[in-house]
Length: 202
Image 1: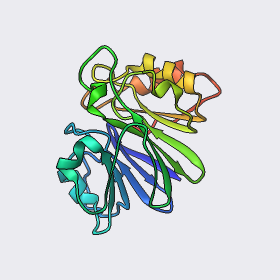
Image 2: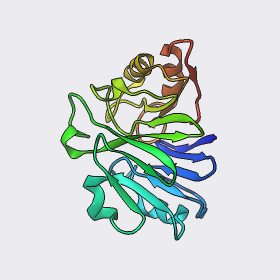
Image 3: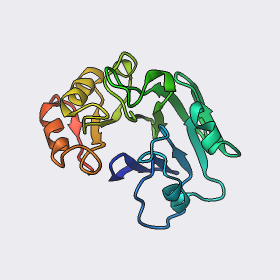
Image 4: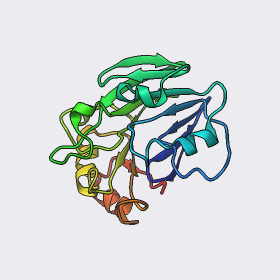
């Protein structure tokens, strides 16, 4: 499994299939996406222009149920928070993704993070969220969590979440572009428990 971050929260995982999460600022016409997961409908996570650069005729989409009117149709799976489903051979869990104490991503919207089991590893992509009663119970091997602050957790809260759920590997996202200083990932790394490996991909 190879994990890349194009920028911000635009994630590409290459395994037996090519999987994207929230493609954004894609520079090349790749048309290599087997699956595309969208966490919510904000422009920096749901960009049709970028989706068009990576989708193929048979690309499968996984989206929150609240986005059906934006991207419903063939090859589209809609999930509600708490849903579990096998999609294209991958076990997928829909994790509620929301803010606590701010209203950019309200809990009642039904925005999602995802746990996808890839090569036997449970990969958690948190979406835009703060630490909350749902994600602090996540069981995963690899956690990709926002650290930029303002709209999401900052590096301190993200480190607290990671130290609580204890993945093998933690990867900070959502910084160095729209929001979050370019050194937020390193600040996050310094606060994460030493037994957890931190990978900086931005």
